[in-house]
Amino acid sequence: MRMADDFPSPIGIPDDVAEALEPVRFGAGAAQVLYFASVTSTNDVAARLADRGAPDGTTVVAELQTAGRGRLGRAWYSPPGAGLYASVVLRPEIGPGSISDPGGRDRSSLSLVTLAAGVALAEAVRRCTHLPVEIKWPNDLVVGCRKLAGILTEASGSDGIDYLILGFGINLRPAAYPPGLADRATSIEVELGRAVERGRLLAECLASVAAWNDALRAGKAERILERWQSLAPSSRGARVEWAAQAGIASGVTEGIDRDGGLLVRTDDRLERIIAGEVRWLT
Image (cartoon, rainbow, N blue to C red; front, side):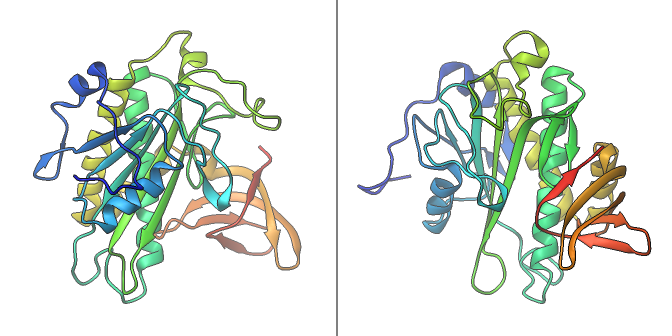
């Protein structure tokens, strides 16, 4: 794909990564991967490629993000060589009830894509490392109480969804995290006591994303929700608090609904949380 003059130039894919990616399929063809030394954000680059017609499964990988971001507009700390930073272009299929249906289900469909991505990435990391990776609602992968990876799904389209960008960052190696992150973050190398092959991890992630995306397109939302909840034990029985209209509210998690909303039991009712900050107390 030809790059514009103001577009960052991709570099050659490292041999270990290229070799691992050879058998990975996305839809009818091989996964198209563009590798960059440095970008502002892999999500931004993937979105620009999607605007120019990049096909389903096009993946942007970078050694460094200078302006990586996570949920709620937070900065995503992306030091060079310390993580796997990638974004995948997903082009939904058109049809009644599909993710591109402009009949009001775009938000719930976007949530399902995020849930499917959590399942895909958790399973990929587990296969590569055998670490007991779990999902924490709505978009984090954790080992114990420490964050290992984050997921950011963004949509574009004026009438329905034209494409989705699925971004993820996985901590591979320990880094000098900024204050406030050091006690909450971990990496695969810290947990395993050894490095992991980044090429194999990327290949596992893309293959798993493709498989679970196919399941979503095939209408297997129930399967996705069931697997997500099995990988997210904190979605049931954990005490949480959040900012409600009347102030700080608290309760105990009772799973998620069909659209990915977190269900929380308070003293007198069942609340549904779809956005905002949730603080996990247990």
